Figure 1 (cartoon, rainbow, N blue to C red):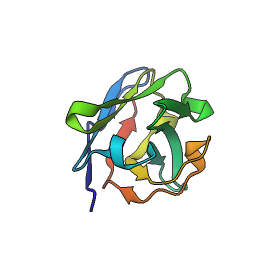
Figure 2: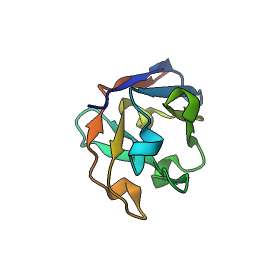
Figure 3: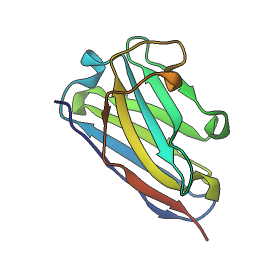
Length: 125
């Protein structure tokens, strides 16, 4: 069973940056069709922030993070990365990585099979 472990969360001031990592116990690029970062703000439902279709390496972003977040993979290390720049308080939440065996043009709408435990991101002055 695939295991995903997120790291890199923390407290950052508005306008700052963080880099989240998700280490996988298996080759998720080879074995899954989509990988993603989700987030859940306090009192809100979990939402997709960014995803990548693994065969094309094509990425999608939620409108509110487009241009500020970048999803990437380090295939050699089986690691999914989310670079987050120009953070604002609305980005606060628990961030989760996930993998899906399904395919759709909009990978943010896919069902995801495996999830990490999450890492807390807090944007506050």
